[in-house]
Length: 176
Image 1 (tube, helix red, strand yellow):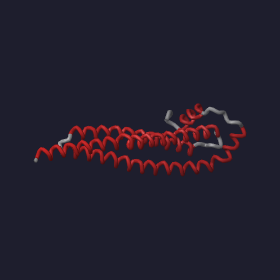
Image 2: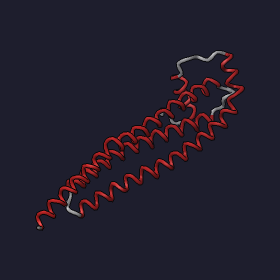
Image 3: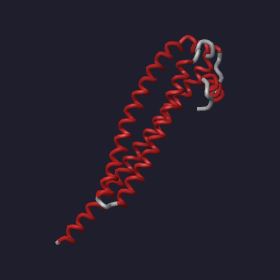
Image 4: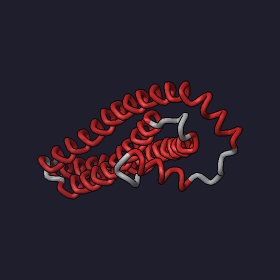
């Protein structure tokens, strides 16, 4: 997000707002915004919990990939270990994108909760729209991670397993 202060970020959000609010819309926002800010605080808590759960899952996946790569190297399968490490790097980048989107979302929620909505309802509406866009970005990045994992990582791990099975059979046949 652009701007380092709440005021700068709200100005940027207001500039992005496509529709100018009528006086009736401003009055409606002024009447409902304090209650809405309480809901925003609950949403911020959900976002923090979501971040903690995603971090636990993503770190677990990345840790298992690293352990697999180490085992493969120890077994003399450096080519397969390189594949697994490359996959870990790709997944790590996807996880970092989710974390960045979550940080942006949490910042927008903080801005929304800290906004004086009765004084400037337009800024509140703009921040609300920005929070929706940030939430959609989190959903998109999370889906991107999940899709990449299920469609690419799982296939690569299956290829590694198949290659290891083939190399084990070759070693066994040579021993006879």
